[in-house]
Amino acid sequence: MSLEIYGLVLLALLFVVIFIGFPISFTLITLGVGFGYIALGERVFHLMTLSFFNTMTDTVLAAVALFTFMGYVLESAGLMERLFKAVQLISGRIKGSLYMATIFTATIFAAATGIVGAAVTIIGLMAGPVMRKAKYDTGLSAGTICAGGTLGILIPPSVMLVVMGPVFSVSVARLYAAAIIPGLLLAFIYLSYTMTRVMLEPALGPALSEEERNVPRSTLVREFFFGLVPPVTLIVMTLGTIIAGYATPTEGAALGCVGALAVTAAHGRLSRKILTDSVYRTAETTSMVMVLLAASTFMGVVFSALGTPKFIAETLLQWNLPPGFFLLGLLVVCFILGWPLEWVPIVVVIVPIFLPILMGLKVDMIWFSILLAVTLQSCWLSPPVALSAYYLKAIMPEWSLLEIYKGMMPFMFLQALAVALIYFFPQITLWLPKAVFG
Image 1 (tube, rainbow, N blue to C red):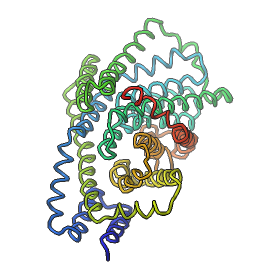
Image 2 (image 1 turned 180 degrees about the horizontal axis):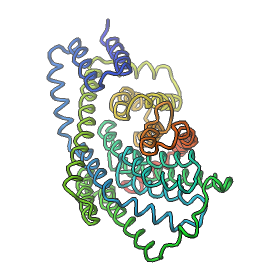
Image 3 (image 1 turned 90 degrees about the horizontal axis):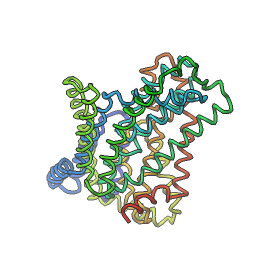
């Protein structure tokens, strides 16, 4: 049996073992060592050491830990509650004002932290009880909260984009610039959909009563100011310095951490317990991502040594498939895999297998990265798994899982619309990076 065929066996076995439920990192290492020994002998152990060392010492990937820490600290600052309440009261005369406040707050929160679970939880805690009390439609409320929370996976400082950069050999700063317009476009699509639904069916989102809106103007201005200015300043300080080229992603993330600590302290929320909890959760999340990334890098080296990626690429290119057909097929595969798997194994294990083909087709990797990010974002909203639904159900037990699923389905189709727009109009993604970096 040729080494290329051994690689195909390795790939098939990898999928089988992952879907059985074995831990992905240890599966990658075990299969990499086993099949690598067939191709390389004892050199496979040297390759494993080198792969792990290079991954763990990559300074760009230090931004994963720093942005994660920034997100967990900001989660405790209480800024989003003030901003949500202020927007809710300012727009209270408008039917569906709570949908508007939820999407606006979710967009700001997504730009301050790239953690979907935290975003859905915080936004759900803020908006869920208020929407229920105001007799808002359960399905549309659940869909708005879950969809708004998933913006954190796309809008910078997205942790996923930090990981995509080194894996796809593209600049993280360019990816951040490329993700801004698609992220805002999605938020606009969500807002347009919810407000159109309310316009057609006013009972879905009643306006606030006069009594609820009876708040002094000075209080509104103060709450809006203190809820909006600190996170926006933090966003400009981190993303602005990265995109403008004044700081690397790691340096920008470090600035963000300092800013997050300062903002939390200024609001009187910084304590030893919050700091300890944030550090622990950051270590837990970062360890999972980094070990998986190191294991997948090692697997990629072994896979390449077997010659299978080149064999697959040459075979598919000989079929003369239209580039669009191949791209759409790859996105569909990633979307389906996103049901049972997290985004990390898809980005660092599955997609790199097809990178030689993408290079052969001369696909713009920045454009493809954002296409993939929006596709994987939709996995958080699509049954049968839809992790966002479980985060929301945990904090809103009064809402049935079926109602949450029904509410999320229209937003999943809005995600598909966004993917189509980015696919057919690449400048949505590519204009800003070209304008900033040339």
